[in-house]
Length: 140
Image (cartoon, rainbow, N blue to C red; front, side, top):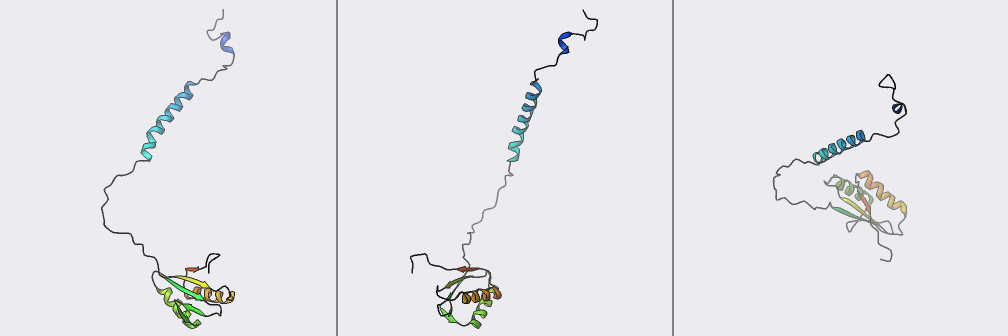
């Protein structure tokens, strides 16, 4: 019989089991916190918005058809023009609001240099939207 109440032989060894009670308590507290905060994050302010009868505008910006024929002739909206007139029309089109799109059609036999000249004239004139028009394979 030992004199000290703490001198028990059973308490001298290491405890080999993990106490799960604090872990379960922490997990339950975290679960409650998440259950309370998740609906608060999705909460939206409910307001009564005014009603208007306006329709969205589906206006497409204007476009200019510009074609370069096989012999290098430039056609602006079905009118043959020269290089000086091309520069003037590009400058006028660049001033419009909204700015029109330039749809460029080039014959497959036209030299690339001529197409590059037209593109550089459009860029120098201030047109920013240039699209190339092509035909699908098998079409005319």
